[in-house]
Every structure is written in C-alpha cells, then in structure tokens.
Length: 282
Image (cartoon, rainbow, N blue to C red; front, side):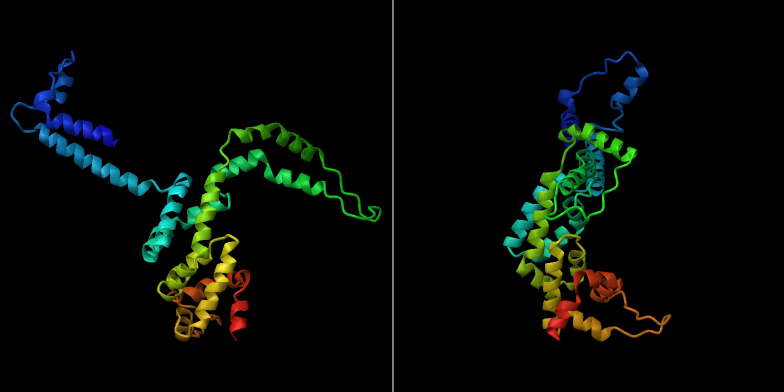
C-alpha cells in the first residue's frame, strides 16, 4: 500500500513530465481521468489527497491489526532489551497489552495450535503411553478394563488415518517457545518484580493471573515482598478497606486491586497458595 501511494504521489507531483493523454475510447471515462483545464483540481492537490487517504488507512490498519504469533520473536527481543537496560516502565507499558496473546500461545490455546493438536491427536498418544504401562505385581486382583465400544474403536481408527495431516498443519511450536521465553523473562526477573511491587503494584494482578506454572513462584515472591514492607500497597489496601453490611458480606472496593484480585474470588487465593507467605510472615 505504501509503495502504491508513493508511486501515485510521485506521478502527480511530476505530472507535467509524466502525464499522458487519455487514450480510452470512452469519452465519459476520460473525463474522470484527466484534470480539468480550469485548474479547479490540480495534480499537487491530487498528491495531497493520496497522502491524506494513505495516512488514514495506515492508522486504521495499525489500530485494527494486532500482533500475532509471528510477532512473538520480535516481542521477545524487545522485552530482553528493555530488561537489560532496566527500562521497566517502558517494558510494562509495552508488554501489558500482549499478555493475553502470550498466555494463549504458551498454553497452545491458539486456533491453529488446537487444529494441529486435534489432527496429531496428542492426547491419543498420551493415552497409548499410559496403556503400555504395566504395574509390578499380580494382575489377578485387578478388575478387567471394559472393552472399548464400537464408536470408540471407529474413533481410534479415524485418528490413525488422519494423523499424517500433522505434517501439513503448522504446529506453532516456535511461537509457543517464544511465548514461554517471554513469560519466563518477565516472571523470573528480580529487578522487574521489585519495581512492580514498589512502583506499579496495580499491574501485579495482570502478571499473577497468567495461567502458567511460573506464576506460582512469582506470586509467592510478590506476596513475600508485599508483606515484608509495612508501607506496601497491600498494607494500604488492608488499612483502607471497609467492612460494609451489604447482604452480610465483606465488600472490597474496586481501587483495592490486590485484595480484589486475590479475594474477589477466593479460589484465586487458594490456587496461588496466598496463605503460605502470609503464614510464614506471621
């Protein structure tokens, strides 16, 4: 698109040298392809119009087209550079909108990854490995496993027949590795974590909510840092939180982002093991 716009601008700017007469047999069509002789619309004005339209289209494309899995390698390099240069504020503003993409690709929940896994039937291969496991000891006391039904056997045959298609459908392993590396750099950086705890605690829930194994160690260290500092955001939220008699429950204001993330749904605090760093501190 940019090449076409530049070509049109150069053509209109040098129209006096490059312009050619209309050779179409249709006179009506030529009337739309030539500039009026009265000077009401000139080639420089046409060049300006092309630039203006190109800027609008470029802005729209930049707004609508978001980074995809192919961009994760570049995103990883930018994250690594910003971490190395200790530009944590810029890093947070840059990476925050892409956390959803990173989590989705790392967990293989992207559409193309699901298609590849469905065709390759990775779960089927895992089931076969489990079936080949033979426990040590007598099998006389073990109940016999029920025989697979007709539909199940047809399904297994179908899986074996289409498994060759896994070589055609993109696996997305490179994007997955890139997403995992980005998450590892973010969640294992001591300096980045301490900056978040002291300066940007409002961003902690976004990183603690990433559904990867690394989040548990990250969340544990974050809670330890917050509890160790009596002036941290966690203590401020506890101090300013109020008991409100609303249907007999305990209300957490929206501005208390840490408490709301952990205890807005108690299952979150349970999964993260929030009780452990609290208990160790007490």
